[in-house]
Image: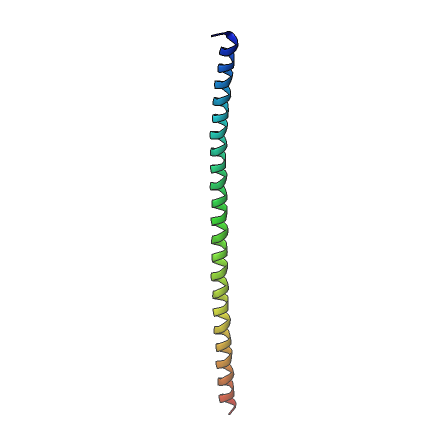
Length: 81
């Protein structure tokens, strides 16, 4: 083989290895970033779920207060009568 063909083959192999290595590194980086985003989404979803539960509990407490106020009003009317 001539020196030119040998140099071209070595260059081709180097380019192939470099491209393949770049693809692997890029894939790993993409996977890592997706995992980090999934963690953030999970934390956000957890916060939303807790917020909904707190809102439900607040509504329940408000309803209990309304019932208690109504009962107090009824008792006050009975005492006046």
